[in-house]
Length: 328
Image (cartoon, rainbow, N blue to C red; front, side, top):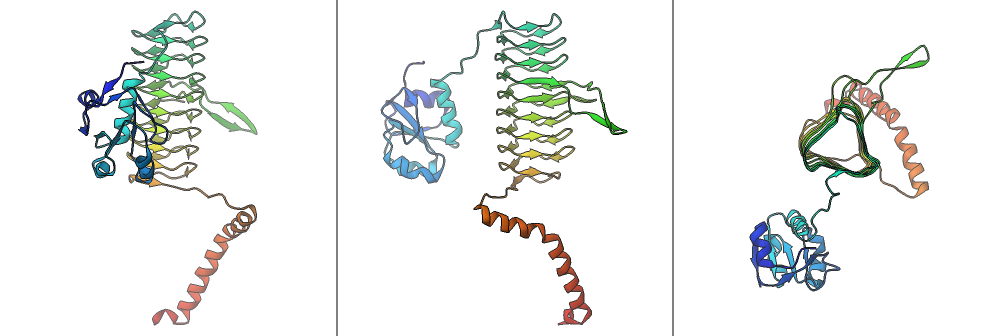
């Protein structure tokens, strides 16, 4: 672990403005609630102001609007959460596997691995695969033939890249498999969480652009395109041929149906189902909140009759207008 840094040294490396004692020593990061001497916490959400008042941290990171809320030594930053993430990187640098291939990995002769690539035990790298410099594949990753992974990728255990997409055609009560002849193209600085599946394209390629971040257990269907710096939380899924824009955030358990387009800078709330294209940036939510079982049954019964109720309202409106009621 790196040695301690003064608050002034942290600011000199990362920017921000120090208020208070610049010489206070910081050894590690911590939450406002649990941090103690030698640790630095952060305040990014106003609802945690009470924790700021009670914290035992040696210093904090916060925004200018909250600077007056504490007398502790502090770093004032435009984006306290992102700044805290960079402080944490100073004291907890990412430890990847050593460069090179583990003896228990299987790498095709035609695969091309860049400089300082790390391939863990049990990985299978298929024919014609390309992996960019400084990428890390943890144990048990499978990359099917012909896929390309950019530089500085982090691929966690259990990920499958390039398996066949779900392409089948109905024929006389049976299913005929459609060969999946596309590939998977992954940009630079992409991180893919454990047990994700990225399907290869049916005809064209499935694409994850630069900086995409996927949490664990995510399914990306064939021919999808995920825009640069989009982040998706765990257990979300994207059906085939959907296109998601850049700088989007997809909440845990969200579902995006196939052949849709989502523009840049869209936030999809957890457990939301997106069933139509989104062409305007913003936050979209479609959750049905949990309730007591009996109340849920009653509410669901009412929802089932909404269409019939709407038809009755339209009929009543027509009768009302026919009698002259709509003329004042």
